[in-house]
Image (cartoon, rainbow, N blue to C red; front, side, top):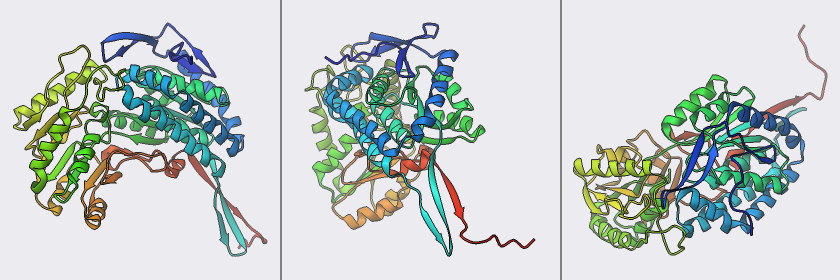
Amino acid sequence: MYDTQPTASHFIDGAYVEDTAGAVIDVIYPATGAVIAQVHAATPAIVEQAVASAQAAQCAWAAMPGLERGQVLRRAAEMIRVRNRDLSVLETWDTGKPLQETLVADAASGADALDYFGGLAGDLTGAHIPLGADFAYTIREALGVCVGIGAWNYPTQIACWKAAPALACGNAMVFKPSETTPLCALKIAEILVEAGLPKGCFNVVQGLGDVGGALVSDPRVAKVSLTGSVPTGRRVNAAAAADLKHVTMELGGKSPLIIFDDADLEDAVGGAMMGNMYSAGQVCSNGTRVFVQRGIRDAFLARFAERAAQIRLGDPMDEAVQMGPLVSAAQMEKVLGYIETARAEGARLICGGARVDTPGVFVEPTVFADVTDGMTIAQEEVFGPVMAVLDFDDEDEVIARANATDFGLAAGVFTRDLTRAHRVIRQLEAGTCWINTYNLTPAGMPFGGFKASGLGRENAAAAIEHYTKTKSVYVAMGPVDAPY
């Protein structure tokens, strides 16, 4: 059987590496509270080893024909699919997400990204620009060493979403997972090397903010890609800007999901479920401000409560279970705090609202109605299974209210009137939008936000722009016409 558990804290230059001088980080299984592993934070020596290894490997990798780079990525994608169950088990240990979910959503999404960018790698061509008798052409070149900093909610997927475009373009990457979920990225690194990636091209180091800061400030690093909170993004972006590094920032959201009264009720409830309860609500793009037109509001709330009552919570390793715990005790306390604040500010509790009385850090699927725009639950990112329902009357009103936020990651619209759907989407200040569905993120569709929700795009051909630099070459076909 494929060995599920990583064997050391870091993966550098094609091998597992340990340095017990680094601070101990406990890996806690949130379904039980048990410590299932320990890793050591990277020491300065480990950080140096990782960056130096990436720098040494990058030029040869970039010089390899794009088709060959793509073949490595696609082999890795196939290996991930073959080992999907073991990787899904590891994801469940790392995050507490139910196996029912991780089997279809995590390693599988990572494989899709590697497959997609593996297919693009051989076609990273420039442009030919006719200029009369002369002409110009452009060349796409790798940036060099990139740093990826991951979040804890999708550790396998995020590692692949960052590695795939970076590697396809000929870069090397040093990846730091969240200290809360450190295990999964190590296995992705292992698979990439097994698939033929040259040693050093994808290294993984563990640690907290100080390790991330050391990587971001390293003068050998050309690019930083972060998935995380807005406050973290501001700090990392400022540090990267000091050295004019390229950045991609996929940050938080407080996204609007707008349900018009002509929407299909079951689809609208299903979309709101996917936008609030999937992964126990721990998804950055979630549509947590659900604007429901008054004509359908009561029916929507009643049906949502019925379906929420049927969600099976419990042991994430039981494939019949649909919702697992939150990722940590700290996250649970944060979510419960938002629930209490919502009650105190006058929101009406429809269902849920409490911790589940079992081992682990479970919170009931929770819905609040009568939420107003100024309430904390409508302003701040909760990152738990908590949905806020706000009433609205007309289209212009809901567009203005939906846009009245510093965030701009995602948005959704449910209506049978597709003309209205497109009209509303065009006016919403959000980078990733859905019509009559929610939270689908295929590798071929750009993902990212506006305003405080981020910079740049992940996935699709748009990501290539963020992992390459363009060299322009003018070719003169005649004598130089100099006036001197």
